[in-house]
Length: 77
Image 1 (cartoon, rainbow, N blue to C red):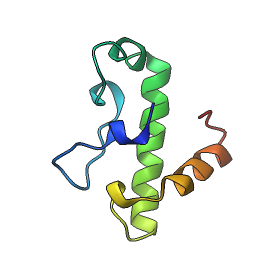
Image 2: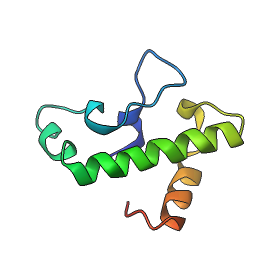
Image 3: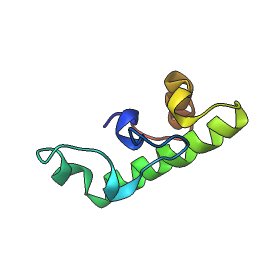
């Protein structure tokens, strides 16, 4: 799953996590699994915290920084 699926196209400063992520009908079945919902919720929370800490918006957040932070928290990417 990519970080981009958590970002609504027309709304800034909002992250969509859980079962409401943007996905095609083909992949929506796999992203609705509880483990995936928890993982993208974790990513959304960390992204929000990093956005605030770096005076950024979620859309402009450095994805490498997000990935490094998630890995340091034992998230499997």
